Length: 146
Image (cartoon, rainbow, N blue to C red; front, side, top):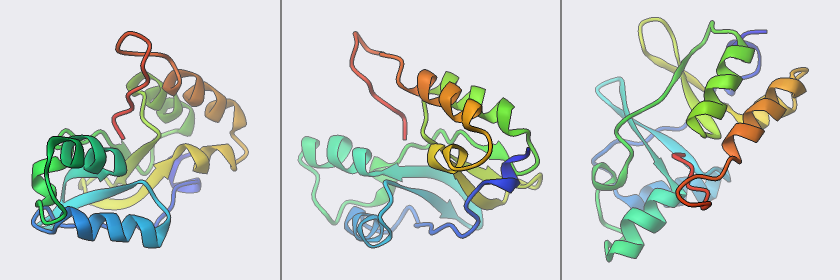
């Protein structure tokens, strides 16, 4: 089974110049915890609810802070035609719950979440990813990238 078989294809994105308040409102409206950040038709980062809380509010930054200041710029991603078992193992190793999905031209075409894998016929891959994601880091504290 390939990533394209289980990914979510309709992905909301934000620009690095938008405010974190805009991102937070979109997350609330869509009931999601992360948004890919796009600039000039390229994926340049991810912004999560955790980024907003820890890198923003906890550091005294307000709602008008630009997404660029809080986003994670090192984007981990997968290709639309990769095998799901390979990506599940990769998600476990990276300890991430979701990955942007790109085509071979590196254009964003979707997002793959652990929940997408869990509701597919690939529950073994979901279990593998969840075990890796749940592995304690940083002295026992769980700190996912996104």
